Image (cartoon, rainbow, N blue to C red):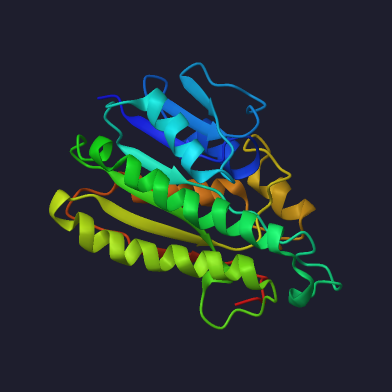
Length: 237
């Protein structure tokens, strides 16, 4: 039986890989991003939305999806501070506009997106909500990026509370907390080549797809709450 996917953040990188690896040819896919994906799939319905404008983005997506059943909702969005990972990063110098944009895109938009699609998810017999988190949202990480870290911690709080809200509806809510990804390599690049060229310091996208497929393959009797997936060489956590 065909499934309906709603995937946020599909223009490139991890989101583009999800479009390629997760749906089957007969599945219906709604992909949301501000810019159009580089490689469009035949079953993809692209919805242009600017998630820094949460209410507008919610309404644009809902207008297209309507009352359609949604089996899988994957929220793959997270913008960083402009000087993230830079020795010059200084939280005191983060301006109001940058902070507001990060909170709107990473948190506000995700809450509104999930809330607006709950009735659609309830039409499915085995619905899943998956949030893409980060090791910056884990306890005792070593990152300095305050606002991004705050938004990823918030996602973890959301999944626990959502589970209680949706338990009776048997909608599983999960978060996948990822470390450094080898996003410059496509899924077509063999894993061994990715490992060699990245000195095995980055997570191949194929590994992330396997984790996502595991979550999607579980029955409605299970709830995979959190998967933490740092790179083996990652000293951040």
